[in-house]
Structure formats: C-alpha cells, structure tokens
Amino acid sequence: SLSFRLIGTEYNLVGKNATVSFDIQNNDTWEDCELGLFTIYEQTVNLEKGTTDFKAYDTVGVMGKAQYEMGSINFPCSVANLLEQVANKFGLTVNATNVPNLSHIITEDLYAKITGVTYRDIIAEIACATASVAEVSGSEIQLRPIEFGSTEILTYDNLKKAKLEPKYGPVNSVVLARTPAEDNIVVKDDESIAENGLTEIKLANNEILDDNRQILAQPILDAVDDFYFYPFEITTEGHGWYEIGDRLAITDGTNTWEIIISSISLSIGNGMKEILKG
Image (cartoon, rainbow, N blue to C red; front, top):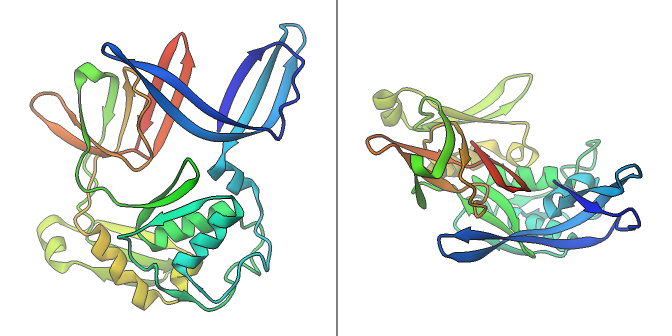
C-alpha cells in the first residue's frame, strides 16, 4: 500500500489511478525509480492543518480487495491459463517461463465453494504451485523463478542497521499438507538431508496442489532443492530499486550472508528511509 499527504483540502481522487515514481541520487547522477500504478481508495481531510491524507493500493493490493466471482474464470484450464485469465481481468499481460507445473490441468472450479477468496489469493496459490515469486511490474505480471545467485553485494557502508539470523536451509524436502488433518505428501532429497540435516518447505491447503499432490510435489522440490538464505532485517542508506524476491549478499569484509527480500518499506520525507526484510 501507499500513503501520502498533499497540502490542500479540495481533492476528489478516490477511485483515480496514479503512476508513482521518484528520483534518487546515485553518486553524481539521478535515477528514476518507478513504484508502479496505484489506485486511490481513501482520502482523509484534516481541516485544521489544511492537508489531505490518501491511501492507495498497487495492482496486487487491488486484487486483494476483489472477491472471486464464480463463473468469472473458465474451467478446465491449465495453471498457466488460470494465471492469464486472472491477469486479463486486471489488464495485465503475463511473463511466466522456467517455473514448474504450469501445464497442469485444473479440471473444475477450485474456488466456487470457498468463501472470501480474492484474486490475490489465487495468484498466491499459483506462485506456490510453481515455486515462484509473483510480482506486477508495470502492466505485466511475472512469475519469477527462485533466485539462487545474488544480484548485488551490500557492504556495511551501504547500511545503517543490520539484523541477521542463522542460516535457513539448504531446503531438501517439500511437504504438501492438508491441515488440520496432517494428511501429508512428502518428497525429499535424502542425500542432502544426510549431509545437512532436514529443512522442509510446507505448503498447506493449496487448492491447485491438492488437485494432484503426488504429481505436483516433485517438480517443486526440483526447483527449490539446495535453496538457502539468512533471515534478516536491514535499514539501507536509501536505494529504492529493489523488488520482492531479489537475492542480495551482505558482507562485512570477512563474512558474507545471502538474503532474499520478502518485504520492502519506503518512507520518503526529508530523505528516504528504506527497510528490507526477509
């Protein structure tokens, strides 16, 4: 979500769309960082201060507010086509390659009898079923394969604060679960478990995976086998160009920690405050 404040009280922007970007100085040059398209859902006027506060959501946030309607998606369809149908409802094109289980056929409407499902929930299930990170960039929704190699190295000079936790992984088991019954399908890499100990990823009550757990589990393990990262929270000097799913490396000059970004918080006022978590 995006929150911002404007001077003045005579606005009528609820329901309007806006592309949000800002410029950031990188050494002697200025770089444009685009946050994407946002839809304004709320405005609050402060008549004493003469300002208006707004709350807006990007396309993923809009999907999270849109309840699934039975009949709005045609079944049977492949996982890839399910993604395309959801994307079309929100004016998006699709970029999804090199991820597993896209060709799996879903024979019936998995969500017809489930209350409260949103289109964002369906996208999240697709991402789990394909061992990928789903993100919207501009007018395109992407399924990004899990990153195994870091794309940028951060030194302590780039950071204001860093909290690093013990290594998670390497992943060597995938559990497709039905909870609370604990009716599980497990696939594993026995050689890695013997060498490194057990680290499992548990995916519970995923409607797409539940369709054929025995067939769909192994391709997910193949995609994430040996994946690892260090849980973390850092405050950077203020960069603004990261995306969910990016894999970075942090070094103190002697030690190196590989991290995966799962949360980004930007505060822009007198300068920028950027907090990354994963």
